Image (cartoon, rainbow, N blue to C red; front, side):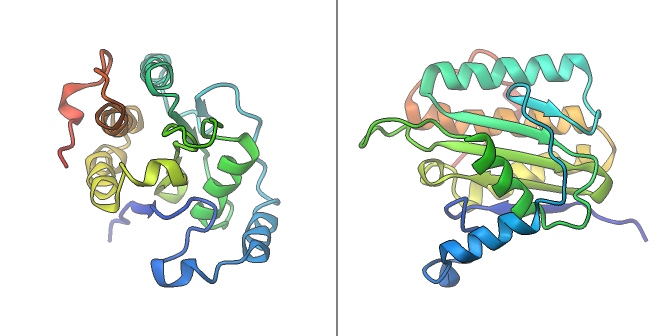
Length: 199
């Protein structure tokens, strides 16, 4: 029987990653414990917006993803971190994504009231574990709701299952970028038109 790719979607406040009914009871000690549990997994320091530690992306894929993420950042202050890790070493993918988000500081730190504050998104792919996770920070949650994130995960999954990781990420990241473009009223010049996700 063929294994299927697990698409995890953390669409609450990123540090909590709890279902809605549990969100109010998630304490800082629980978050700290989750971070402690992932310390055994070595995550290299970031080198840019696209960190292909699993070595599954071509140089063209990396360049295209980096160009798109930089355009989003330049036009909205939104930050998208794309990370591939070969394996999670048994760690929950949401906890690893949370650690990346917290340790790397993904998300613009704007002034109070700035709509771009904390609009970070982490897209984490672990190809050997057949898992992908889209994590959103508080500021991005309002314009990247569950329904859109689910469509994005479904958009990427066929390429991932076929081993076409670059193609899947290019479609998914373009779709995430379009949510930023709609929220901050700008036009993308680098996004793949086939990745359009309607609300």
